[in-house]
Length: 209
Image (cartoon, rainbow, N blue to C red):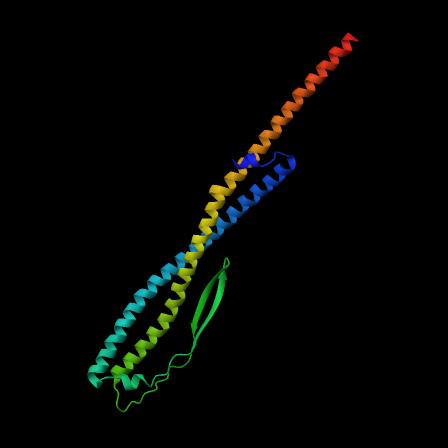
């Protein structure tokens, strides 16, 4: 057993108590971190649910407008090719209890139509505006879902460490402290009994003298 591998001395008792105290403190901190991360995760989960509903409706609206534009104008691919690739997406990060969460932002700038109006109609305009909304909602959703993933991974790791402290390290240190304490107390009792025997022997010797 682990407690029998430790020599029962006062020095080892002090060290074992210190290790037990640190393990208990570590568990408390991990438990607090886990709770904070769970609260943060739940706020993102709620936000993700709202965004998914929003983006689903936005996609339906955008593809419906695109379909109508294709019907009224023929294929709109030449006009779509006039729209430049989005380069205004910026990614940074913020730390929550040591977990790096992404911050995805889309540069705010005036919406600029890059196709001509002479051969297009309002259906294409509606599709253009709808897909711009899709783009912005997708940026938000990407940030939220990536944060959910990272928080979930961090919570699992924190849970495993907390479980290891609670179920293995703390009980093991408690057993070691108990083993050393019991051993030292037994040693003290034996020493006390030995001193009583010596004292009684000295008294008998003194009476005979």
